[in-house]
Image (cartoon, rainbow, N blue to C red; front, side, top):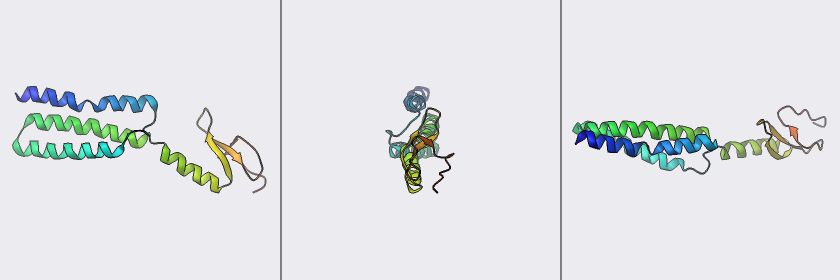
Length: 131
């Protein structure tokens, strides 16, 4: 019975692999709740502790796998979170006098310089003559 429950538990724990693939494929995690994964990991840690206390191999194995997979999901959510990074950069560059901030095909930050009136400048390399 322990073996069967380990197989069932591991198959459930691998559900996070779908989320890992989705984040990796899209290179963004903006539409995924970080709180859900933190709560899941928290619950799995307590189930692991309980499994250790009662000596249940199926609970121990299942929750180790679950914690591992869900930790990868949480790490990828943090790594591929773009909303907060973009808004922080946009605020910073707006204070420096740039508007319409975005990125080109190569990932360089571009925008319009309000001081000199140039459009589509590479912000990190732009040396405004009117500074």
